[in-house]
Amino acid sequence: MSYVEGFVVAVPTANKDEYRRHAAAAAPIFKDLGVTRHVEAWADDVPDGKVTDFRKAVQAKDDEDVVFSWFEYPSRQVRDSANERMMSDPRMKEMGESMPFDGQRMIFSGFATIVEEGSGGAMGYTDGFVAPAPDREAYRAMAATAAPIFLEHGATRVVEAWGDDVRDGKVTDFKKAVKAEEGENVVFSWIEWPSKEARVAGWEKVMADERMKPPEQMPFDGKRMFWGGFAPILDA
Image (cartoon, rainbow, N blue to C red; front, side, top):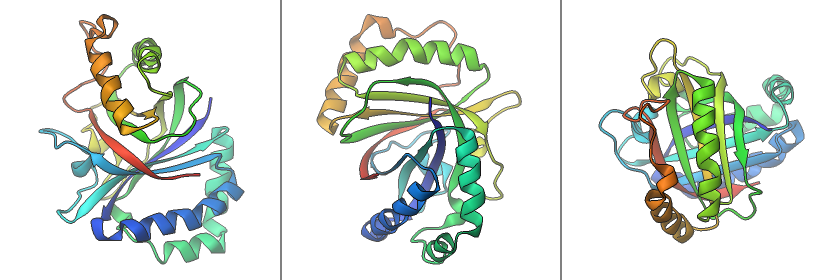
């Protein structure tokens, strides 16, 4: 299974094209450093939540949108090596000097994949999720049961990744984003769809599927989980 570096970023809406160009220019550098897949997805159907949501997670302003993004690596060792090399790569320094977003409010951490189902392929849409969970195995069991059902109803890939290197931030971070309590970890996950239309139709079928009836005891706090629909602007 792959190792994931997950990101959530607040980007000025007016900077969407600039952000896409910036990410596309950086993609070959990340590939050189060991990234096997680099995805940037722009907010399309991101609801406001009462307790938590994607916008609150990065303190997004009225004129900003949210980007849900991830790197995939073959292993944590490759990811750790890549991060070390990034610190001394002059190309990264140059990219850092021209970021079209506020890096202080970007949240990122490393996650170990615990469920990875589906062959993927051309992705036209993705659902992104971030949730607090106390019990890795209980969460994995639930996710492993649900993943094949999503695939049956049109999804092409389902990935669930457990917090492995969750970093504390001064302004924002994943733990703050889900208001994590003592003993809880953070889950970063996504569902890939061939299109938004397939996603809408798929969710209708999933919600009507008797196999998706929630257990009496959910292995995470749904009130503090947040999710949204995102349109990919880069899939390298």
